[in-house]
Length: 327
Ligand SMILES: [Zn+2]
Ligand SMILES: [Zn+2]
Image 1: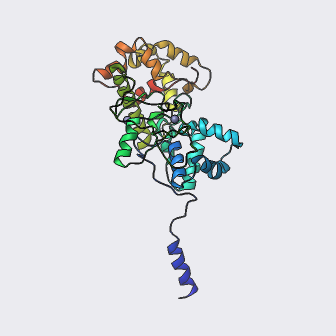
Image 2: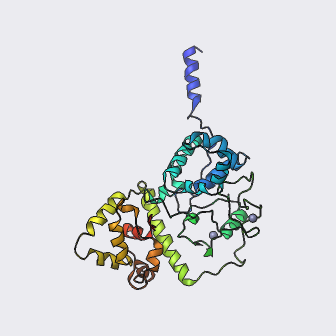
Image 3: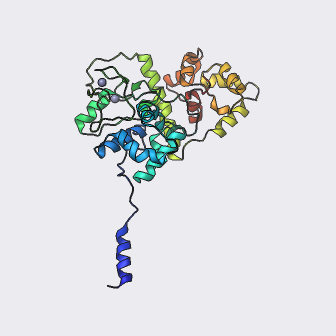
């Protein structure tokens, strides 16, 4: 076999380019149960049988713009890393980096950017990881990988839609919140502080969830699902056009009244939003303000949803959700 033939055999064996890190498929990617990016980072560490925090220090931090001293990295992994799951610059930077290092495409879908697009980035995520103990227990029983769902990390989501159980934020043993990126080398689903198992059977006692809250949470999940589908089926939502259009509509006669009726939110919120001198779409009323509005109990989309009707467009649903940067 000549030199040319050898070359063609070798190039045929080359295959696709190798990635620096192994790239496992994230759990439930492409559904509203998708794994969060920080859960994926923890999983990468466990796959390599190393501390996820060590993996971050050695393999990821050298490639990002910010530099971290050792104490800064500890603080980052305990709490600040939560914003890797968000829709701001950090989430975009780290998801792109992880795509490059693992060869796994579309990791932005593990962040809120893949869900709510470029809406203002503040106020959507909880400060610390949250989980459903019954989901953990079921997954372990069925032999599934235990992971942290991105859905649970929304501030506005308070109960697990699968089990109607309030999400947990503190370990039942040591009562401490969980680190976002753990030093624990081997086990998912255990407390990052004391090692206790965080799962629980459905029959175990937990804080009662009222019927009103259950109905409210169903509405929230439905609205989030619409947003997720809109972003997933096309590309991450870009909001400038929507809010520019809304601002234009509000200049019409009677527009504030119509919007008040449509959304169930007091018109003063829209006056405030319109008078914010910064980027107009950076201030939008939140679901919480939607919920607490006096009007919402009688005329809102929430009430209409309770009666079995839905809003006109996903964009209208979306408008009700997002927390204000200027709250
Ligand atoms: Zn659950
Ligand atoms: Zn604990």
